[in-house]
Length: 534
Ligand SMILES: C[S@@+](CC[C@H](N)C(=O)[O-])C[C@H]1O[C@@H](n2cnc3c(N)ncnc32)[C@H](O)[C@@H]1O
Image 1 (cartoon, rainbow, N blue to C red):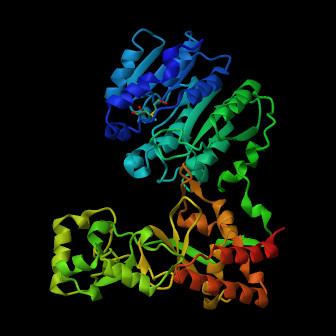
Image 2: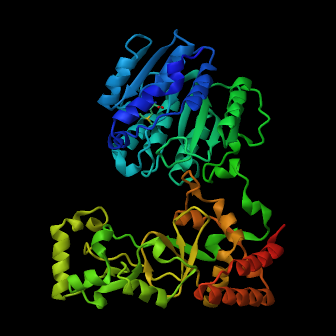
């Protein structure tokens, strides 16, 4: 029977109340909710030979607390790097010798030991927030697993733990599902497949975040170092009630669950986004689907290295006497282009309202005000920042032609495309879309491409390739779109194209006149659906 205090999570709540968010973020201290921790413990307990257990990122030890409430005859070894939480944990477990806690970095410790059970909610750190060079090297040397430098720390914990699994050992991890669909995740997925221990991936997509303050969607990974099955199941969890599905999975292991998302481990392809294994794919509804890259290329917007220094509004230009010839018109914030069309008038309006719509563009300038502003940048160490330090001269802007179409990077309600009629540059809140200039697709059809991109059909097909950040927030990297799919507009006959372009022009005029145009886009979409539905 579980004791009340374990279930309440009062220990974690108390710690969160008395410790600054800054400190918790520094160590990635987000705690596992009890119902999930309990299920993960049950998976590990499924190893009937369970004697030794590892907790690589202890925190306040929710997993160990639950484990010890079920079983006292096991030995747990735990690691933690923050001495504050470590001391708290020491106090919590002061009455038991079933757990040994070490104030050490898990990645560099204990490589020789193997465990019957490993259970973890690892720290989430992007590659630039931990010592990625040395840590990746350590993992590569020890496990012979080749890794991508952009790898997030949580996947390295997972790889090390799999390496440390004893025969018949069980491992349960809760991690952000990001790696399943990101580029850096490919090599991690490859490792999971080759290790042959992957059994279940339970994708949690609650309406609310599992972790209060972490903007991520999580997944639970169950591994078993046995030969009982060669199948991997993917299960979607949308609510707390759905958690009973996991209970069933655990209780029935290794009987084949009545799970429709089931694959032989050898069938899994590390190169593709694994959302295609657990989510209905929109592209399968349509015929004549082609890679997006056949028609256009997506590139990220200009990264300055210091927007505060490089961006200008008219008052700042006046203050530093920088004349317009040294300022590049540029959309700096996504909200500054609200509509589907961004015109010269929109740009002038922003300029008039003193919005930041220029970039300092000083290369080859000999003007004294410009030189003074460059010196000011050097006095403020702008030239030593990550991006500027690698440029020659440090204040040179990245070379990007203005793109005829922009697409927003973060989206809550589907991708938002903007036709850049003002022909100005853009920072990274938008990606640039450059239609291919080849015989397949000529300049004139940029409008046809844009008309298509406005439709729901274009968005749902591209959604297959998005990364979800939880809470309905989707992010698209340029390659998510480049590697996404679209309808093959090239098969449309002249008559249909004219029909679409006519609707498109009507839509454009409505939007420029500040009127609603949704119905027109729906008509364009209807034409597409008619032509392309299977
Ligand atoms: C996401 S929290 C999870 C805590 C707890 N296991 C839970 O599930 O509620 C991760 C914990 O790992 C610790 N940590 C961060 N980096 C670590 C490392 N390299 N080695 C060991 N522990 C680490 C953090 O201080 C934090 O307490």
